[in-house]
Length: 338
Picture 1 (cartoon, rainbow, N blue to C red):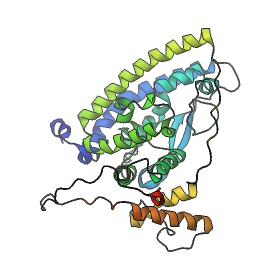
Picture 2 (cartoon, rainbow, N blue to C red):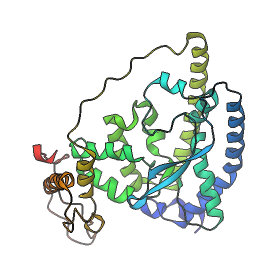
Picture 3 (tube, one colour):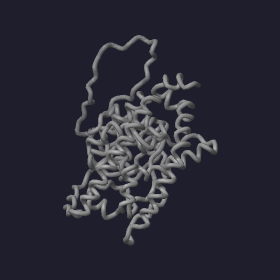
C-alpha cells in the first residue's frame, strides 16, 4: 500500500492495517537511539542525587490490563521510591519520593520510553505488535476497579461504557500516547482515575478514537505531545527554582473516605455481566455454585444486567432504516441498578 492510500484509511481500517505498523516502525527506528541516550543521561544525573531513598531509575515491570482482559507486564523506568499504583495527588509526597532527574523523566515521558524500546526490538524479531505510539493508555487493576465502580453506580453512561470495554479494551493494543493526553488535558485533571471528570473524559476519548483514528490524526497527536512536553519542561524548571527558595511547604493529608457497599467482589461480578456470554465466568453463567460472598455479588450483577439496555447490534447498511426515534442520552436507572 502506498502512502496516499494509507493516508485515506480511517477508524478500524487504519488501526488494523499493515501500513500503520510499517509507519510506526519507521518512527521507532529513528527515535529509539535518542530514547536510549536520554535515559542513560537521566540515570547518570540521578546517581548524583543524595539520599538512600532515591529511585533507582532502572527499568522495572508493571502489571497492566491488555486486550482480551488479560494482564501483561509493561516496562517502565522506576522514577519513584516505593512500588505503588495509587495515584499521587500531593506535590509534597511526589517530591519526597523522587529526585530532580526522575521528576524530569516523568515530565518528558521518559519513564514510558522503555515500552517503545522493547516494542521496537520485538518487531525487529518479526513479532506482531503489542504496543502502539497512539492508542488508549493501559490501566492497572486498581484503576479498572474505579472505572467499573463508576459504571455500576450509574456515573458513566452504559452504551459508551459497553463499547469502551468490548471494542477498545478487549480488541485494541495499548499505546504510549492518547488523544486524551494531548487534546483532552488529562494532566490538568487532578487525581487521575479518582476524579469523576477524568474517568468520563478517558471513556469518551478512547471510544471516539476508534472511529476517528488515521495517519493524519496520529501525526497531530505526536506533534501536540512534543509541544506539551516543551511547555511542561519550562513549567517544571520554574517550579524547581521556586522550591529551592520557598521550600516544599506543608499539606494536610486527605481525610479517609467512608466504606462503600460496592466491594471488589460485587464490582467483579457486575463487570463480568458486561462481557459477551462466551467470556463470562462459570459462576456468571450459572455453571458453578459460588460461595456466599460471590453468590450475593452475582445476584446483584444479575439485577444490574437486567436493568441495562441491550448491547448495540451492527445494522446492515442496505437494510431499511429503523423508525426515527431518539433514545434518552443516559438510560433511566433505579436504586437496584446502582
